[in-house]
Structures are given as structure tokens and as C-alpha cells.
Image (cartoon, rainbow, N blue to C red; front, top):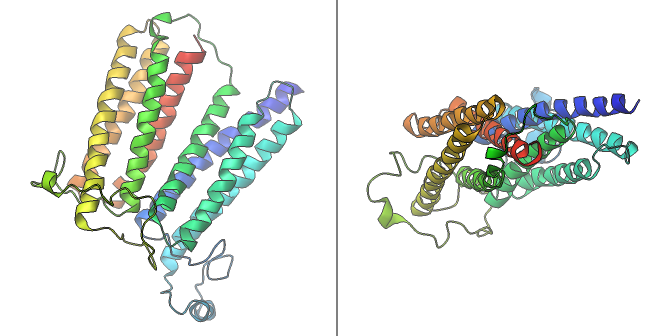
Length: 335
């Protein structure tokens, strides 16, 4: 009976991970199609549960929000994201409830409850994204909240699958601590990416490897990373000057170089030092994802931020983080 209950929770967690990846992808799509304010209210859209499309609905929407241009396409992009996010929240609630019912029987409880708290706060961030008119710190926080929810769900899934390696590989165990450092570095880089996106700085630098000529003289850190910006009617399409956006973009590029070099070193060491095929394959997988992520980042610049590539950049970042978590978890817990 206990194993059956644990198996049920495990299946729900796996389903929630897949759903969380979809939610992160839809969030990136909504952000990149400038649909963050496609619905000017929350949790509905122009006071409705769906998107106004009929003539009558459009007239009601215009009467309720006379200063808002009603764009059904952007509204659908935003509402589909909300529908999937709501489904994810309900699924996480079910996981937390079942974990509570099975408390004391070997099923983790604190982690599911923590995920429930985070996804609840994530819903609040979704509301503030609209009510605060895309304030960059809120948009970045919403992005990080989505990544955090996904990563904790994946960690819960690992804890519910007590796999053991057939043979020990103590030669790479010490790299577990370096994996934790890698997770911190990658998290900081994802945050920089979120700050770049939320401040509409993705296309400020159009040349490789760092930026176009003269970028050093244009760096300014005075207001580029202020978490609380001046009050504006809306922060859509950005509020910073060119040099401030350039500074943000340059810092993100430099962060990408540091992150890539560190993770490349870590993965190379694990691959060379490991005596088991498990760690060789896992480090190779993370390396492939790292290479793909760098390639997508370069493609964003080279092809001027095509939508499919930009969304892919977000998805692969999530997959890279999950694979790095699995590698680090395996190095620290399963040898």
C-alpha cells in the first residue's frame, strides 16, 4: 500500500515537471511576444474567464478598459500561460496534500510544502506583473520563481527515486561541491538573462563576442541594476537609456563566458576522472546542453532574436539546470 501511494506521488511529480516546463516555455513566449499586458487585469482577462473575441465582448472590454488597446492574439498568449500555470498550481496542491497524508512513512513532506509556498508566491508575482505594469524586478522574480518551482519539483522526483549506482566512483565525489558552485553560478546567469529580458536589452549589443566597438566607454552602473525603478505608468518596452541597457547586456555576456568556462571545466573533470559510464554519460549530456545553450545565445544575436530561438534559449536553460542538479545530486548523494 505504501509503495503504491509513493508511486502515485512520483507519477504526479513527473507530470508536474513536464507541466512546469510547458509553463516556463509559455511564460517566455508571452514575454517575447510582448503579451505580458495582453490582459490588463488578473486573474481573468478584461473581466472575463477567457479572451474577448466576439463583437459584444470586445465592446465590453473597451468600455471597461478605455485606455487599453484590445489585442486578442496577445491576450490569448497570456491567458493560455495562466491556464497552464493554474493547472500546475492545482497539481502541486495535490502533491502536497498526498505527501501530508503519507507523512512519517518515508515520503518527503517539507519539500512538497515548500514547493506549494513558492508556487503560491509565484501566483502573486504573476498578479503583480500585471498590476505593476511589467516592473523589471517583478518580471525577473516571476521568471526565477518558475525556474525555482521546476528545479524543486525535479529535486523531489530524485528524492522519490532512491536509485543506487552499481559500483562506487569515489574519484569524482569531491566534484559534488563544485557542482553546487556551478548551480549558484548558473542561477546568477539565468537571473542576469531575466534582467536583460525584462529591461528589453537583448538586442542592445549586436556584435560578438562582447558588444560593438566603444562599449567600454559606454558602461554605466549607476542605474543599470537598480531593483526599484522610478515610478512609471508602464515599464513595457523598457524605461532605461541605451547605455544602461548596454551595460546590462554586457554583464550578461561576460556572465555567460564565466558560466560556460566553469561548467566546461567541471564537466571535463568529471568525464576524465570518472570510472563509471553513468557519470561519463551524465557529464556528456550536460555538456551537450551547455553547448546548445551557448549556440542559441549566439544565434539570438546573429539572427536578431528570432522568437523560436529566444524561446528555445529559455527552455534549454531550464534543461541545463535540471541536468546539472542531477549530476550534483548524484555526486553528493549516490556514491
